[in-house]
Length: 325
Length: 270
Image (tube, rainbow over all chains, first blue to last red; front, side, top):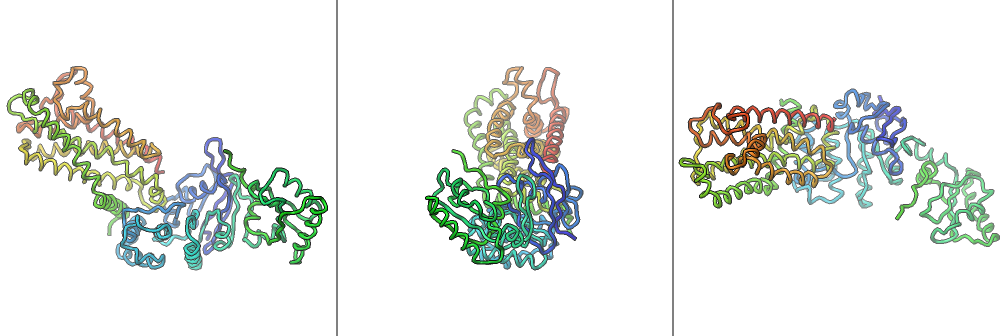
C-alpha cells in the first residue's frame, strides 16, 4: 500500500499551468520534502491532495483511496496542517481538540483520552485550559498539529511546518515529527527550508513550473550533483561583469557553474572530478586564486564545500529573478 | 451513539455558542440596536402615529413586531460574516480537509446558532415591550404564525448571508454590502410606519420586500385578537393583500434563497 500516489497530476488556472503532469509516491513511514520556488505548484499540489482543489487530469490516491472518487474517505486518512495555524483563538486548547475530535467523529468514549494524549505529546498540558489567543507562535503551531492528528491519519501533509519558530522549537517539532514517522505515519512536507528537508525527510521532490525536476534521497541528490562546490567572488557584494570575469577564471575546471544568483556575490562552480579526494577542492581553490591573480582580478573570497540541498535545488531550479522596484 | 452528521453538526454549533458566550458584545449589540431604534421611534412618533393608527392601536403595539423582525433580519443578514472570517483565517479549509460526512453541517450549525440567538433576542424584546405595556393579542395559534414568519425571515436571510459569504473574498466587502442593504430594506418596509402613509407606488414596491411580507402577518397576530389568514393586511394594485399571501410570498423567497445558497455552497464547498 502506498500512503500517497500522485499520478499525471495536471491543474491549470486560466492560462497558468500550475501542475503539469506531477508523479510521485510516498510509502508508510516515509517523509518526503517538497521543495520548489513560489509559483512552482506546491500549494496547488497540497490543496489537491487535501481535496481543497480538484485536478483537471491525473489522479491522487491516499492509502489506495482515490481523492476524486471518494473524497470523504480520503480525508479520513489524511491530516493537514497549513502554513498558518488554523486554530480557534476564542477556544482553549482543550476545547479546540474536543471540537476537532467531534469533527473527525471520534467515539465519545475516546475523546477525553485522545485529547489528553495529544496535549501531552505536544507539550501543551499546562496551557490546555487557557484561551488560544494567548498562545505563543510555537504553541499555536503545536496545537494545530495536534488537531490534524486527532484521527490518527496515515498521511500528514505539512506546509512550512517550522516557519516562524525559534531554533529550539524547530528542533522539538522535528523530533516529534520524526517520532510520528517512526510510528508509521507518512509525511509530506512542503518547505523552503533546506535544513528542515534534510533533517526530516528521507526523500526530496523538487518541483518547478508544475513539474517534478528531480527527486531522490538528500544524499543521492547531493552525490549526483558533484564532489565539491567552489564558490568564488571578486567583491564583497555583486558587481556588474563579475560573473563573466569569474566564468573566464573557472574555464578549464572540471564541472559546471550553478545558475547565477544575482543576490549573491559568489560564483558557484560544481566540481565533478576528482570525486573521492577531499583535498581536491582545496587544490582547485589554490589554482583558481593563482589564475585570478595572474589575470589581474584577485579573488575577494574562495570557499570549498560539499554540495548541500540548496545547491541541488539551485542546479535544478534556477533562483527567481530579483524583485523589481 | 449520535450519527456522524449530527456529531459534526453539534460540535460546530457548540463552537458558535462558545463564541457568543466569550464575545457577548455581538449578541448584546444585536439586541440593543433594535431596542434603541424602537425606543427612539416610540419617543419621537408615538403621538403623531397614534393619530394615524386610530383608536385602539398604540404605536408601541404597532412597532414591536417591526423591532422583532428587524432583530431577526439583522442577525440573519450577518450570519455569514463569521463564516467569512473562518474562510479568511484558513479555518474553513481545516473543516473542508476534515472527514465531514456532509459539509452542509458547516452551514446548518451556523443557521442553528443564528436561529437560537435570534429567538433569545426576540424573547428579550417581547418581555421588555410587555413590561412597557405592549400586549400580544393573537393567542397560541397567533404565536405560531408569528414564529413561522420570524423563522422564514431567519432562514431566508441566513441563506442569503451564507451564500454571500462564499461569494466575497474579504469580510469588509460583505460588511459594506450588509450595511448598504439593511437600511433600505428596513425603511422600504412597514417596520416602523404603516403602509398607508407611503405613496401608492411605493406601497406596491414595499409589498415586494420580504421584510414587509414577514411584518404584516406578525403585526396582525400581535395587534388583532380576531385574526385569520384571510385577513386583509394591505392594499395593492392587484387588490387586497391577505395574511396568507404574505406568508406564501415569504415562503417562496425563503425557498428561492435556500436553493440559491445551496447552489453557491455546493460549488464553493465541493
